[in-house]
Length: 255
Length: 318
Image 1 (cartoon, rainbow over the protein chains, first blue to last red):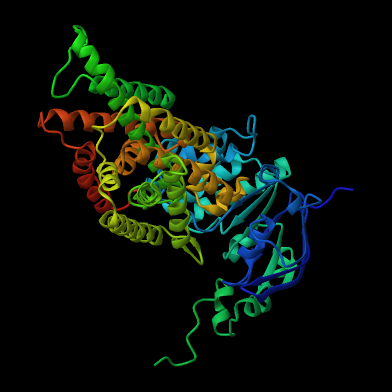
Image 2: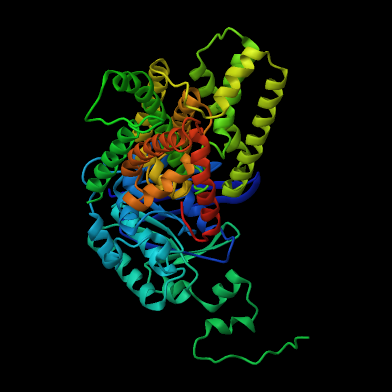
C-alpha cells in the first residue's frame, strides 16, 4: 500500500508552555499540492516547521513517507523534505548560483537537479552571477526557490512562496510547482494568503488559532461563510470575497 | 574559473610574503647573498616572516569564520573579544601561576573558546543570535578583558609585566623559530576543522532554519566552527599578541576576489591575512629604520579607515 508523504496524528504543540495546537491530524498524499490558509497567527508556519522537523510536537506523531520524522538523520531528511521559510535574507555575500548550489549539499554524489536546471526552472538563468543583494524581492524569492528545487526533495514545504511576487511570477510559480508535482510526484505543501491563487491547488486546509476548521478542494471549501469565519470578517467587510460586486458604501460612519 | 582565481590569489599572497623577507633596515638582494645576509635571513627575517604569516593567516581565516557564523560583516576575533579572552587567559597563566601548569597556546585557546561562548550567549535573544547584540556583547566583553588585563599588569611583578606587555603590543621583533611548532599545530588543526565544515559555514550564513532544512545541525556546525576560530585566534595570540583588523579587512577583500563560498574564500583568507601581516611587518621595520613600528600599528592604520568605510557603506552584505 502506498503510504502518505506526510502524516500528522494527534499533534499537540505549545508556545512557551501555552497550548497552541491540540489534537491536529491530517495527511498529505504523495504528489499532492496542498495549501494552508488562515489569518496571521493561525499556525500555518508552525505546521510547516513541524513537518520540516524544525519544531518538535509535545504529543502525537509526524511521519514522513511512513517513517517518524525524528528517525531520519539530517541528510536523509533533507533528501526527503525541503523547507523554505517566509523571511529570506538578501544581505548575504553570495551570488545566485552559489546559493542555488547549496541545495545540492544533502546529496553526497551528484544532486538530482543541476544548478543550471534549477536556475532555469526558476527563470533566473541570466542572473546566475548576480549578487543576492542586487535582486528584486521577487527575484530573491525565486533564487531561494531554485535552491530548494536543486535539493530535489520528495516534499517541498514552502512558507508563503508567493509573497512579493507579481502576478506573472505567481502564475508561473504555481504552474511550475504543479508541473513538478505532476511530472515527478513531488509533494508540495505551502502557506498562502491569496485566495485567488489558492483556487489552483489540489486541496486546502483552513486554520485558525492552531485549529483545523475546514479541509477540502478549493472550490468546495472556499465559501463566503468559511472566509468570514476564518478571518473574522463582518458582512460589510466580506465584500472583498465578492469580486465584481463593486466596492460597497460604508454603512458605519467613521469619525 | 573561480578555482583558478583562488589558486592565483594564494600564490600571489605567498610570493608577497616571501618578498617581504628581503625588506628591512638592511635591504637584501636575493640574487647576491653574502654570509651576513644569509645569517640575517635565516636567524631573523625568515622566522619573523613565518610567524607573521601564520599569525596573519590565522586571524584572516578566523575572521572569515566568525563573520559567517555570526552573520555579521563586522565580526572579527579582535572586535568580538576573542583575542582579548585569549590574551587574558594567557596573561593569567604568566602573572598568577608563575610556573605554568599548561602551555601558553592551550591557555590562550581556553580563553578564546570561553570568550566565544560568552559572546554567543550575550548575543542570543529570544529569536536567536542577533547581530547587533553580538557586536555590542563582544565589544563590552573586549573592554572588560582589557580592564582585567590592565589590573593584573598593575599588580604584577616586573618580569611577568614585561612578558605581558611585549605580548600585548603585537610586536614581532622577538619572533623566533621556537615559537612556530606550537602555533602551527593549533593553526593546522583549526584550518583543517574549518575546511571540513566549510559547507556548514556556508549554510549557517543563510540562517538556522534553512541550514536545518539542508540537513545540517546548526548548533553542532557552530560549535565546530567556534572551536576552529578559537584554535586559530589562540595560535595568533600566542605567536605575537593581539593584532586587530586583519580578521575584519581580509575576508571582505577576499569575497570581492573569489566570492563568498567558504571552500574557496577560507584558504584565500588565510593566505591573504598572512601576506598582509608580513607586508605590514616589513613596512614597519623599513619605513622608519632603524626604529621599528610594530606590525599591529601599521595594520590598524590601514584597518581603521576600512572599518569606518564598512560601517558607512549601507547595504553591504557579510
